[in-house]
Amino acid sequence: MSAPAPVPTNRNSATPLVSQIGHDIEARIRSGALRRGARLPSIRRMARECGVSTLTIANTYLRLSGAGLVESRGTRGYFVTGPARSTPMIQRSIDSMWLLQHAYEEEAPVIKAGCGWLPPEMLFTSATRRALAALPAERMAAMLEYGNPYGHAGLRHDIRQMLGQRDIECEESNIILTHGASQALELAVRCLSTRGDMVLVEDPGYCNLYPALQALGLRIASIPRNPDGPCPAQLERMVRRHRPRLFITTSILHNPTGTCSTADNMRAVLKIARQHDLTVIEDDIFLDLAPVGQQTLSQLGGLERVVHIGSFSKTIGPGLRVGYVACAADTAQRILRQKMASNLTTAPLNEEIVHAIVSSGLYRPHLAHLRESLTRAQARVCARLEQAGMQLYFHPAGGMFAWARFGREHDVRALAERACQHDIMLAPGHLFRPGEQPSQWFRFNVAHADDERLFTFIQNIAAGTD
Image (cartoon, rainbow, N blue to C red; front, side, top):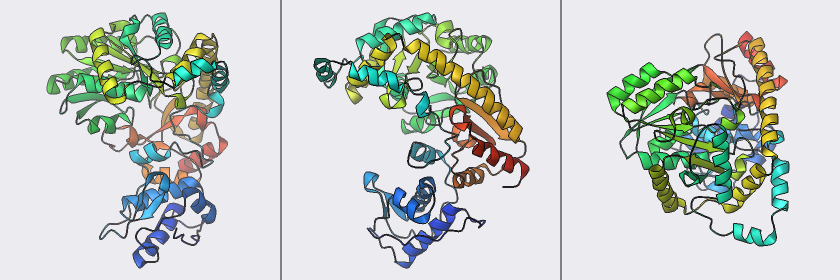
């Protein structure tokens, strides 16, 4: 390893720490002091030697990688690839790839105000440990083999009952378990579209969806997301103009705005879908965080026209990676074949754990407690955001997310980078737009954002003192 000496940093300088460290390493690469093939120190070691957070070093290495000066080789670390001729340092580090690659790191003690998952204290770890401890040895051996392509039979029965309690009727054979909701979404899209098709999405919406659709060779057109749901008038216009096969929407506790579609809005969407032979994929992974009485497209329209996607990642733990898709019988068979062709089966052990939790009688009280905790966090964080000088798009009744902006316009990429220097992870609004178009909005996860350091930072930005 050719380790550069610790980079001297100046926290009083107007130049961000990421730029200070990046320019120093770039100079060493261009001068030959760091030669092609040299391995840079690990993110953790470099952060310790420079006296900065690991997130600062992660962003520095990402910039250098984008400039063609270093490359990531997975678990082996970052290596010098040599100076890229006429290639300037990338002047932004907050983009969709940053969110995808670095938001999940646990090394830095950052305030993950913009992340999309629950904090450790809200995960159902006690029930997970109990389920593992209760698993007999002979049952454990079976769980390490390939499972049923449909997924765990007991868990599919549980899901059918849970959906039935929300008046979403389906057979167990119409429920396919998946490796998280992301795989459920990809399988449904693969089976219901072909390369070159137009797919309608919400703007703003789920940030990981857009690159996934593009990777499948699909074209994207967007529908504005209003406080009451996707705009029906624009949906009608885009359907007539593009004749799309699919529309992907979130009815309940929309990511990132925290809104829920109203019954009138959903009826309008379903009417358009029926008139124009449009299939709607309802990506409702936050359904269990909403009140039981909250209506869904699947409830109002059934599963002939709607594909319902759910997950246990947001209520038990994201590491279990257990999701599901519920849909019409012919669509379920197509999804099953696609699942077997790409992954054979999903993880029986994870599904057994989730089944044990859901069927134990502990899951419903856990959900009630989780909903109550998030509702209280929503009230506190939204009030503090407004007190600190931000404007809310909507006052959510629960769930994880709040969507807010400052009263005057800012360079949001620079602002998000500045927040990194304070060990705060923000999620600027352009990440949640199909083409990363400019946005002054920010997504806040209320379960992570109730921190005085965050509100002080926001208040200083709003007052122009930071």
